[in-house]
Image 1: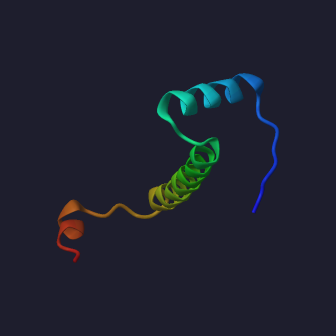
Image 2: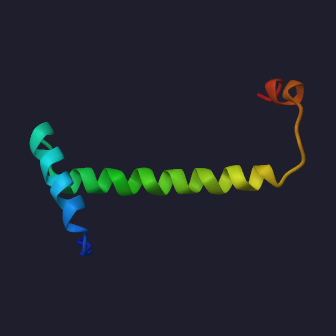
Length: 65
């Protein structure tokens, strides 16, 4: 699948330079960046939902298998 989006010129230059220095393909870097961002976003949702939950004592948590 192909996704086309505009990217700020300075960001694109940094991406090109990074890939050149490290011998990476831009496609691989962008794909990994999107995957990492999505995982972080899901983790944040989980953290926020837990913050709204009642407090759980450490003694109760550490004994959970």
